[in-house]
Amino acid sequence: MSFSRSVVKMSAGWKNIKYRQDMPPPGGYGAVPYKRNLPVRGLGGFTLFGLGIGLSAIGVKMLWERKVLEQFTNQESHQAELVYYPLLQAEKDRTELRLHKEKIESEALNIVGTGFDPTYEPGIGNVYHTPMYEPALMESLSPFWQSIKLWYQPPNIEKLGP
Image 1 (tube, rainbow, N blue to C red):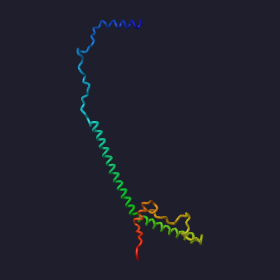
Image 2 (image 1 turned 90 degrees about the horizontal axis):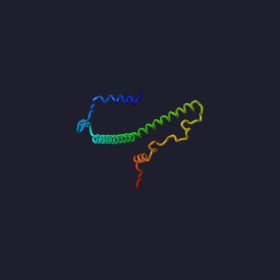
Image 3 (image 1 turned 90 degrees about the vertical axis):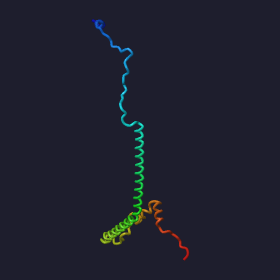
Image 4 (image 1 turned 180 degrees about the vertical axis):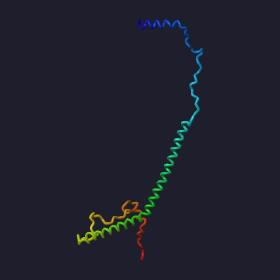
């Protein structure tokens, strides 16, 4: 039995069944309510955008104020360093002088005192061929320090008359 004959036999049996197909009512079905009637939640797009811009502006303002405060603090600490600089320079000079004296005494004790080199003069030799004392840091830095130095020096005014 072939395939086509079996299909014909099966379809012949369906004709005996009383079958009625569902059809739409006359005039069609009513409208399907497909829209979701949900309440609006949260803020709108423009409101959120405005809030973002506003918060960014507040953040920039706070950063600007912090920057101004930090500049003021740095300027104040710099001025404090300028005030204490002569004291620190004097303390450094005292320390260098004390170390230099200790070095001379040590040379006198170790080289001359032991008889290793009786002609050696302590404190005279400089193996680095550089000046013993360097100019103060203030004088060697920048034109700003030169102007500070000139500001605090007494003026060179020639006296007229006797």
